[in-house]
Length: 288
Image (tube, rainbow, N blue to C red):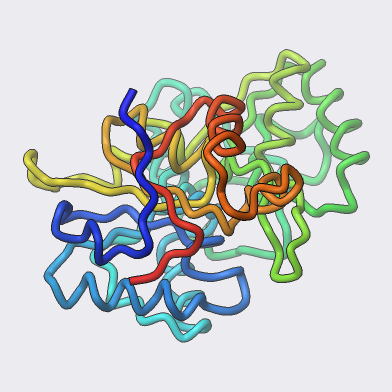
């Protein structure tokens, strides 16, 4: 097994790659404010004619992601492509070419946080309020105070053998104050444990990488950057591309709890084993 290399900044390895798959939350921003050093690093890469693709497990569509970056003063034009798991799901439902989607039905019970009417534009779906009226569950988001309620709903759905589409497979996200909150992936896993059928989208599934790398030259030298060992690093590893693990994201509390603020090798190795993923490179924060 190749040993993970710690780096002080992207400048140390930038010449080794020409295509970058960049996660958003925990890397470029915290959901509210941009991480300026990370954005500066993107400018440096762009100045060197690197291909930069956003690869995110956001349930929002790509155009919504574009607007969110603008709101946080991140120039969307830095990026050649925006691939979100929400965009992947939208196209799957729209085309219904896949056998799973061909038989899915049109009536969906939607779990989400906030409102995202844009996601449903162009889709022949009917949103319903009761599980008994649904053909499937569309898991677009979660609200942290509703998890006990979700358990009751999932039990009813499992009894009816309703399929679930998970547009965001993340298990946790980290808030600006450092709080970890549960994400839709937790609900999807609970549903599987009840015997429910879940169609996962986004990282670490192969489909997310195929979509992100469409029309990318076969000889491209690719680096995936992210803060989730299971999703970003594990997905890159399974797809066969190099990865950079940013430790100041969702795994920061785990590292701090083991008193590994200096990123000691022992603590990191335990973390890699726990999540079944080993990065090519590691850095605390994304900087140039």
